[in-house]
Every structure is written in C-alpha cells, then in structure tokens.
Length: 239
Ligand code: ADP
Ligand code: ADP
Image 1 (cartoon, rainbow, N blue to C red):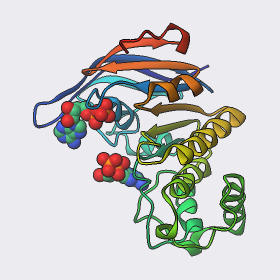
Image 2: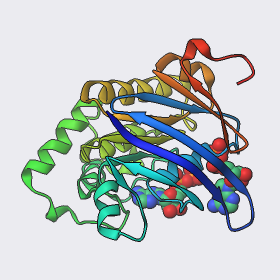
Image 3: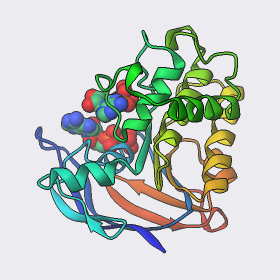
Image 4: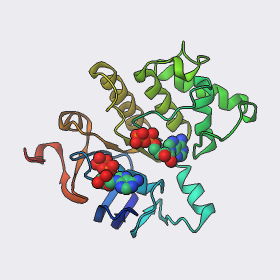
C-alpha cells in the first residue's frame, strides 16, 4: 500500500533559492529508500518538507491517505506523530537523560521543550528502556545525553523515532557526522528496525556505496530535480 505520495513538490526559500522543483514521489509501506545527490541538491529540503519542518511553496503531500496541510493543525499533528525524524546532529536535549530523550518520542512530534519526565507512564518508560536495550544502550539509559559518543547519540535518536511507533522514518544524513564503524552500526540499526516493523524509511545519504548496500530503492536528486528512481543495480556512475 502507498503510504506517501508527493506531487509537484516545489520549494523556493525566501532568499530566492529554488531548492526543489516539481518532485513526484510515491512510497509504499516498508520500503527502505536512500535519497542521494550532491550537497545542496535539495535532499534535506525534501525530507523536511514531508513533515513540514519546511513549508513547501507548491505541491501536494499525501500521507496515509490524508493531504498534509499546515492550515489543519489537528490533522498535521496527527500525521506528524506517525513520522519519526532522525537528524544528522542528533537533536537530543543534552542536559536530559537518554531515557527522557527517548520518551520525548512518545509525544509524537518531538520538541526539545516538550514534556517532563513525570508525565510518562511506567509502560512508556519500560517501552523506552526496551528500545534502548535493543539498540545496545542498556548501560546508557540514565546517563546524560551529552556524555555519549556520536554513534551512541544517534542510536538514542533512532530510539526516539521508534518510540513514536511511526509508519515512516525520515533520516536526514544520519551518519554524516560519524566514523565508519559507528556509521555501520547506526545504518544496521535503522535498517533492521524498519524492516522488522515494516516501517518505510527515507534516508538521505551522500555515500552511494552505503545507499547501494541498504536501499531497496534509490532516489537521485540533482539541483532540486529527481534524476533517478530505481534499484541499486540500475544506478549508473554519473549519479
Ligand atoms: P542537501 O540536503 O541536498 O544538501 P538542501 O536541501 O540542504 O540540500 O539545500 C538545497 C538548497 O537550498 C541549497 O542551495 C541550500 O543552500 C538551500 N537552502 C537550504 N536551506 C535553506 C534555508 N533555510 N534558507 C535558504 N536556503 C536554503
Ligand atoms: P543541521 O543538521 O543543519 O544542524 P538540524 O538537523 O540540527 O540541522 O535541525 C535544524 C532544524 O530542525 C532546527 O532549526 C529546528 O527548527 C528543526 N528541529 C530540530 N530538532 C527538532 C525536533 N526535535 N523537533 C522539531 N523540529 C526540530
């Protein structure tokens, strides 16, 4: 089943930069899609437009059969709660514990200001701890987020996204700040969890080899335009 349909997505930033022009994209449930392309191609704008961290200039985004619109706050909130976001720079609340950071995912759409620890149920806490154990952070649960290594921080970011029980995960350059070893762990963690739970994933990557290793499908973006949409086998050298 189709979970995400993007038609004619265009984004012109206020400075005049045309970051995306007329992007069409359909995502089926459970697909693991890598978005590749040079720096400045518009990959990040594409992901951010989907959950409206960026407001599109034109186009229609339909998620779970509902058109996403910033005008309908209730609907937007509900849809966003089913989209987990993973960031290059983790976006953890540094002074909070690892566990609290994961619990923020329970609020659906995370905000660094959202929620205090006491609002969560024991069941939520246990679910968060279970996720942390699963991603190999059993010994980090009560540490402050800023005590962790980059790779560990990103696994907290993954756990926070999974805590939402999302239908879709958007991962924006999740390994761009990590060494090769941590990158492999982080990609394996995202991949395995998405595949096991049937979560669709759009992951921005600048290394083509990584995209080829994991993705069931690859989208190539150049200068704001979709220039490739196919499998790793079909990918040519110029992409
Ligand atoms: P990528 O993720 O592929 O590196 P981006 O989506 O970050 O590409 O950027 C696409 C283009 O939009 C670039 O030219 C970038 O400079 C520009 N851009 C990105 N974010 C903003 C912003 N907030 N304001 C103005 N221009 C932006
Ligand atoms: P960069 O990789 O360029 O440093 P980030 O991924 O750190 O960018 O985040 C950039 C923007 O994303 C922020 O300005 C903020 O508006 C938005 N953002 C970051 N974290 C969250 C969050 N947890 N929930 C909602 N929006 C967020």
